[in-house]
Image 1 (cartoon, rainbow over the protein chains, first blue to last red):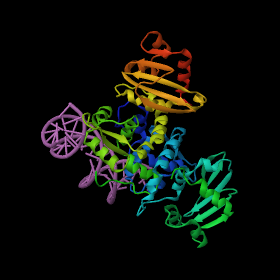
Image 2: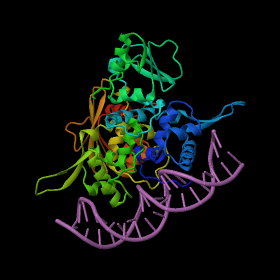
Image 3: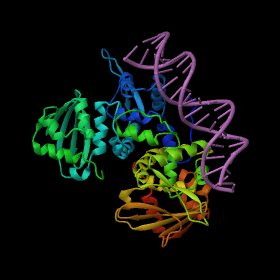
Image 4: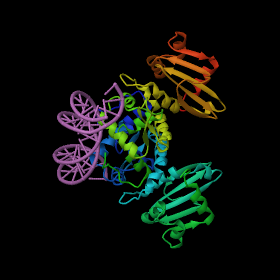
Length: 218
Length: 218
DNA sequence: CGGAATCCTCTTCGATACTG
DNA sequence: CAGTATCGAAGAGGATTCCG
């Protein structure tokens, strides 16, 4: 942890990569963009990361000022990690990367790991500002038992964990069924008609949502 | 090169990082965003990269469809690498990263390597669209003998190598003096008055350029 | 001479086991 | 649950050599 490898270049990209360019680091940031996470949460989400690596990365990120650890007061008293403002400032970078990577999802997922929390970045990456122009709406999801929602307003998108107050749409599905729709293996309409995916809200809202989360040039 | 390590996550960020997340890769992309480069050019710019690594990265990038190698017809007959459309699509990601990394440049550069071509990404990262609103201008540079220019139009910025046709401003400096100004160690006005940096163009243009390339929140 | 492949050493990664 | 410790495997760095 102490002595770090550096590109030794006077360039903002190189210096940025000196901090977030190591293996797993940006994926940790991705997870923390969804909110505070415990060590265990990260370890589960980042399937295959060595425990020593996760600890080292967290230490590095903390000393670089991107994250901080917080303890809830007793009796809950759990330790969590969360992004600092500096860490959250990586959101545009992560979003840009996610957008670039979208078409790589066309390749079959096979045995790839997946977490419902990642739907946050997926929504961000797929968000189409043109389609969202002039729209104010709240789209709620409950994928694999994980409730979260997206608020579209003023052409921008904000995501939240938990149950939405007054959603225009609420979509419930299992991990597997949801992914099959995302992959294109299963048609959304059919999935709804066959009851695999449940939807509360108008058909109009559903249609609009589909458009809002259809990325441009793709 | 053949068998690759993968995060095995069904997430566009993870899949993107499977391709561009390895050491040096995004720096190669940074260099190629400036235009086609030869093996030797990259090797010089990416100070410290192993010859085997550079070759391996280029091969991986090529098979991933991000770059292609081109040969000029004889007699020049040199082999160069250039980005494909898919590779150029990384520009927003690289720009976002560069923008995030800007404030890391505050740390002294010490013995850090530097190449005048990197001014392209620096300009992109520092570009302030608000200040550029309604402006049409061409700003030319010749840093360390490397001529390049930035065209601001319709609130957007485009960079080019070579000599600008009708620049509103032409700024010439050595690597070292230019960096001292960028670092803040040397004041631009003083550098001009003392003749270290030469400027052709109106003082008005100079002022406007300074504003256009002053990043927001910084 | 530029564009790599080879070799060797060193660091980092990955996986598991272990501890406060 | 939150990390350390450990160790074989893979990757990085640097020099040298090979090929055209």
